[in-house]
Amino acid sequence: MKKVLITANVYKHLFTFHLPYIRMLKDNGCQVDVIAARDDREVTNADNCHYWDLTRSPYNFRNIKAYKQLKRLVKKEKYDLIHCHTPTAAFITRLAVRKARKKGTKVLYTAHGFHFYKGSPILFWMCYYPIEKFLSRWTDAIVLINAEDYKLVQKKGFKNKKTYYLNSMGINSKRFEHVSTENDGKIRSEEGYNENQFLMIYVAEFIYRKNHRFLIEASLELAKIMDDFKILFIGRGELKTTIQKYALSIGANK
Image (cartoon, rainbow, N blue to C red):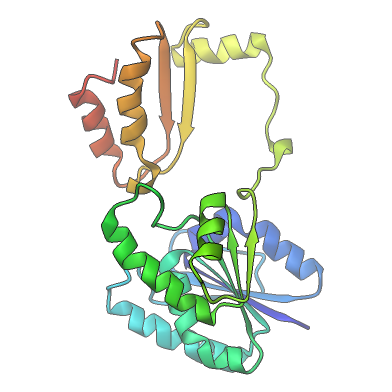
């Protein structure tokens, strides 16, 4: 039986994105373990759930403890494949499993969007880019979900053996029901919008990378050419109150 370990910062990430992959691996005869920091989610379909003292900040000394915890786990379980996600978890994972790779363990890293990209702060390039490039030497394959990251890895001399490109992560269209014109009008009425308003919906966590300010500022320009429209922001996060205050301050909340 092949043994697979999936690593991430928190269980919320695993619960949100990886349940179908865990199920697929188990259906193909693999033992699938997961490791992440404790939070309010569980991954019930994994064979074994492990916890480490990982924090999102790469500069927190608790991550040294997480590094040692993972090394012990990998040494004990002797995984065939380790699939890492999220920047800090992937950083610690690839450092911790260097010896295991020499014994045959394969390391796969899915980058859910690099922090360094065209237009990102220079500090991000100075910090994250050299780290990712250096760690690529201990990575058997990297999976990218946007074309910009894929081209960067190919052109900038990353040391991973293989590079794959997936056009985003995909959606299960069967989970969405078609809304008729009649039901659309009913929903609009219940939510306080009229049927003539043009509604745009942005579903994203209120964090810096989701760039809500850009859409809020763009709404002022759209108001010059569109008579009646609304941008609806759906999500939660640490910057929600800050974003609300910003919209009020520039008059984009009307």
